[in-house]
Length: 450
Image (cartoon, rainbow, N blue to C red):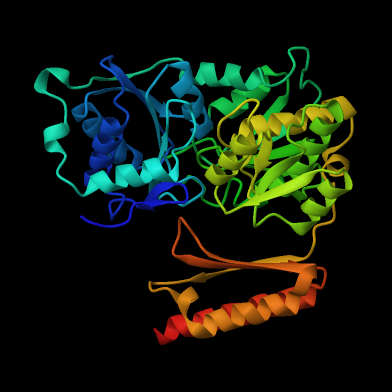
């Protein structure tokens, strides 16, 4: 069973194929359970999932492994990833587990692990767990009288809804706002519409009928066309699109235009900076964020700290340098005053708070900067390491030289899919397109030759 398990966001792959098999999930439960044994108290795990068909299989396999390690498992059912992170701390658990492949199609699934502090595990802890997966750990498991128990926990939706509502001032109401929320047939299909309604909004909820197969299918934050259409149809003030596990968000303004994570971070950063709430003199994002965001922040004497892709790395940098706003262009927004991980609903609530305070439409509030021309293309790979090929290296170096100091080039393998991502940006759109296309062509030719 030897292999590599963890990527940029836990373990992810096609359900019922390595590494997302019941056997691996059970062993992850064993290894994670043993890794977080602390003292001789009854150890707890909170375990949530999204709405994929394979969630039943992975959930039961993980429960078996965790119970074998002596952990009591609290089953949360379908619930957003940030709710799992919150409930780890609220229920004084030793581990949090979220079974989800986030924005991927239904046939994929994944395992995300949280420590007792509600934060995703560090590379070091993941490596320790990964090192145990291919070893014989049976002798380290609990004795017959020390096995764990599993039970369903009621009321977790209400707890998360209350948590989300408390991120706004008690006096703030969303009355007068018509909101379309696209729940991607995923984990937030109950909690997001309910939270918005309880805050006083008129809510039009779409994609809230999960069937195990339709999560993220032509809906949600990665496919917002349906939301754009619905916003027009019902003349809504704003559209909110979540992904399958609701840790990311994309906004649609009243005209149907998309507002990505960079613009959301710019809006929140400016608002918090003006109110004195922004900590650390800047925000954290990844190498994929637009150069326009960096320039916008610079005009306010704020700094954009960049990390490698993955909200886990954003959070680590935020914690290390005392910043409280971070995220990704894709819509993972981390507001550490409230959450330990990306939270699509809470981020959307901060945007709604700006609307209510300033009494201006989303289209005016959300255009904080003109994005620098940016192009991202994905190259599917079946295997091998094309980025180590001499021709590819030469093409990348030539692209960097052509863009010069007025642009950026980011080439990276995806941590969740068999893709090479090629991104360039700069003030000259034709040059950006030419650089990306040339590199994609070389990678494709190298892949074909292999």
